[in-house]
Structure formats: structure tokens, C-alpha cells
Image (tube, rainbow, N blue to C red; front, side):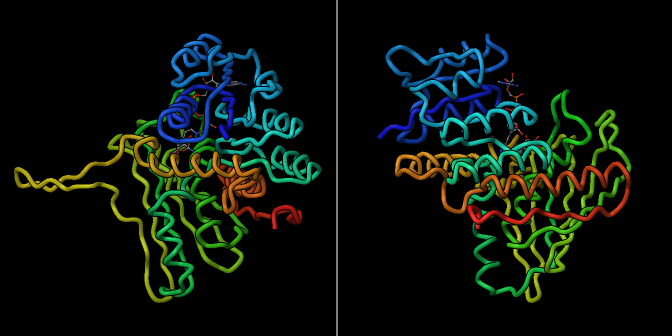
Length: 342
Ligand SMILES: NC(=O)C1=CN([C@@H]2O[C@H](COP(=O)(O)OP(=O)(O)OC[C@H]3O[C@@H](n4cnc5c(N)ncnc54)[C@H](O)[C@@H]3O)[C@@H](O)[C@H]2O)C=CC1
Ligand SMILES: O=C1[C@@H](O)[C@H](O)[C@@H](O)[C@H](O)[C@H]1O
């Protein structure tokens, strides 16, 4: 069975996911696209490999695409603040939806999504927290769950981007960037975050008005501490690091480079250019598993980030944004978890 996918938002990651769905993975076809930039939507549609006989349908709106009878499942890759309306429309149409992170940019928006999905009575919303599929993070989780290094005490998580686009706001260092580390912390530690605090080092002069870098400190219900560094104008490359310090040992992500070069009295290795390079394999696995799950009649992949995880990450990110603004330690409290997500 081929899963016919419609993609909303065909910017950087929308185009990358279309490429993987149509040229790398099996079992899916991209049959429809839409973007507020109609010209871009038309040009991306014209370039889709393996398009259906009549070509890829370009819809005027996301709502129209979701209601297209040829679309079995929806991928949302538009800007964060637009996610909620499309995810809600997909739930209303009872169509599985893969929503790029964040699920929505505020916790109240995520709660509306949870309410709608619970009313539907079936999990059909998956959130693009792709680190859960990264072989290195998976190996790290395996070490933690095996118990061989004892109980985790601290998680150091470093998230560096060479640069960010012009529309990137100071809050986005938390809601768009650190939100990955927040999801990773919850998933790796299998623990909920209960407070957030933000420390602001001296500003990077390359970051304009942005508060960059940031140091975000989270505490978990079991008493572990998570520190997240976001540096989004670091220039030298896309650098993702992580280390868990536990009672009897540590586990950290190794360098991702395949080779090291010794030349001219120097030892060098590559730092990825951006998230596409660093997490290439993770996105591929994430989407192949999603397509396979849908073909098997499931709404989401077992163990993937659900609406609940999208909500939990948003609550923590809301708290961290408040901490950024007022300098306090902000408590985090989740609503009672609906049975659908247990
Ligand atoms: N999982 C990951 O590592 C990554 C996730 N993302 C997420 O993917 C989403 C898109 O990011 P990018 O592709 O980098 O941004 P982008 O700016 O390159 O592309 C977004 C596209 O959405 C379109 N758009 C905006 N509002 C729309 C609306 N209401 N309806 C339809 N189309 C709309 C824009 O015209 C643009 O073409 C964001 O939520 C971002 O956080 C982005 C990069 C990496
Ligand atoms: O999700 C992503 C972007 O939206 C975000 O802006 C970057 O900071 C992240 O590194 C990338 O993975």
C-alpha cells in the first residue's frame, strides 16, 4: 500500500522531507502541497519525483489540502505558530498528521490539540522530535536504561547553530531550538521537568538583538539537573553535544565524523553544516517508520513523540521563556495525563 502524503509548508525542511519521502524511502508518494508562498508551492510541486499521473496538486490553503480525498496523511512543515490550526484540522478530518516541531508554540494551543485528539479517541498526531531516532542518542538511551552507569544525575546538552534566519526572535532560542533538548531530556531520563531557570551570558555581538547564548537550567522530578546551552551564531558549524553524568559513570555522544585528517601538524575532522547533515539518518528512520506504521493501520509510531510529548515540551519552553523575561526560577506543572497517552 502507498501512503499518499500532502505537505503543508514547503520551505527548507518541507522540501527536505519531500526529497526523502520520494527518493530515499519506500511506501509513500507526495500527492499535494501548499504554502502561503504560492510561487514556491508551484515550483516545489513541479520538481517532485515520482509524482502521480496528473502531477502534484497545489492547494491554495492547508485546510483545502487536508480535505483533499487523495491525501491519506498530512505533513506540517510551516512556521511554528501556524501548526495548531493544521493539526486541529487534520484531527477533525481523522487523518494522521506528522507535525514538525514544535507541536505548537504555547501550552494552551497544545492543550487544545490534546483535547481534540482525546475526543477522537485515537492517536494520530506525531511530532518531529527526530533526535529520538538518531542512532547516537538511541545508543545513549540504551546505556542509561541498561543501568550500567547507575542513576542519571545531570544531563549537559549543547545546541549550537552557525547562524539563524532573520525572522528568528529571542524567544525562539527556547521555543524553536532548546525545545529539542527539552524533549531529549524527558525522553532520555524518562523523567518530567519541574522547574526552569535561564542564565544570560554576555551577548555574542554577531547575534544582533538576540539574547545569545543562553544557559537554561532545568530540574526534574527525581532531582536530576539538565543544563542546555543554546548558541545560535557560533559560525563554525552545527554542533550538537550531550553527556549524561550518572552515579557510576558517564555516557556522551561521540563525534559524528567518519574520518579525521592529520595534515600540516594539524588534526581535523568535519563539523556538520546544519541539521540536515547532522540528523540525516534520524529523519530518514523517523519518516520510514511513520510511513510503515500508517501502512499497517496505526496513527503514530510506537515510542515516537505524541501530542502529549509536544505539550510537555511546550509547557517547559513556556516556563523557560518566562524565566528568560523575569529572571526567576519558574515551576513547571503538567495537566493530568489523559489515558490515551499512558
Ligand atoms: N526537526 C528539525 O530539526 C527541524 C524542524 N524545523 C521546523 O520546521 C518548521 C519549518 O521550518 P523551516 O523549513 O526551517 O522554515 P522555512 O521558513 O524554510 O519554511 C517554512 C515554510 O512555511 C511556509 N508557511 C508559513 N506559514 C504558512 C501557512 N500558514 N501555511 C502554509 N505555509 C506556510 C513559508 O512560506 C515557508 O515556505 C518549523 O516549525 C521548524 O521549527 C525546521 C528545521 C529543522
Ligand atoms: O529544529 C531546528 C530549527 O528549527 C532550529 O531553529 C534549530 O535551532 C535547530 O537546531 C533545528 O534542529
